[in-house]
Image (spheres, rainbow, N blue to C red):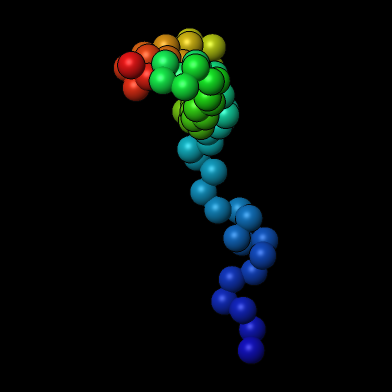
Amino acid sequence: MAKAQSFAEKTMKKKGDQIKVYKVIFPYKSSKSNAYNFSERFIKIPAGSNEQTFLEQEIKKSREYIEKKKD
């Protein structure tokens, strides 16, 4: 029985929304145990946006979240 879709057709699917993904790891010191903990986050950057400014904004948001969580 023949396949309905070939491997080449699967790889040629829609490539319009290409994004880049960065993994960012934040170290922080726990106030309770005085130990270092790590929080990781995957940041997806949409195509056509400035990577540097987008990363800086997302890192700032993540650090603010960690500061709230840690206290």
